[in-house]
Image 1 (tube, rainbow, N blue to C red):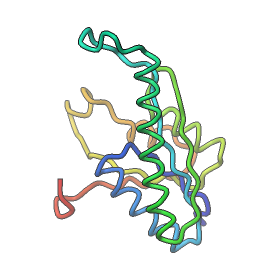
Image 2 (image 1 turned 90 degrees about the vertical axis):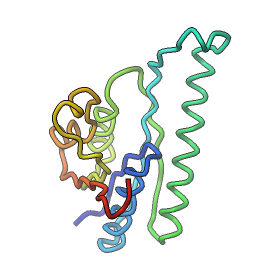
Image 3 (image 1 turned 30 degrees about the horizontal axis):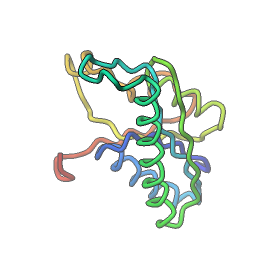
Image 4 (image 1 turned 180 degrees about the horizontal axis):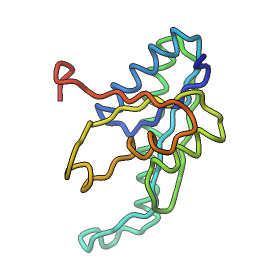
Length: 152
């Protein structure tokens, strides 16, 4: 039923909880996982970073994204689940937009992602890629909220 499972990751503990759930789902469904990380190249460079070029910052973000994808990929492979990775580079916008597009073009059967479960003003101020994904996804979305018993 869920052969192709799309899992966005940003390297956070919350994303790790989502990945763990995606691995369980993939194992039970004999599915495969595609890990995605979005690098937003629209970076605001403060005056304190003078001497650092925009290209240097983007390269650092890209390298960090590749490293966290490699770590997540190793976790999935160690569980015996087939996996591939995709680093998506965008200029501005929400990561959620790129994730929904990836779900359409791959095409995914389900998206599994961790969420902070923010409500009210915190969600408005900080934005919510998970909410965007739920509202715009062409496929089912499984949001995995980190419970207090799992730690903060």
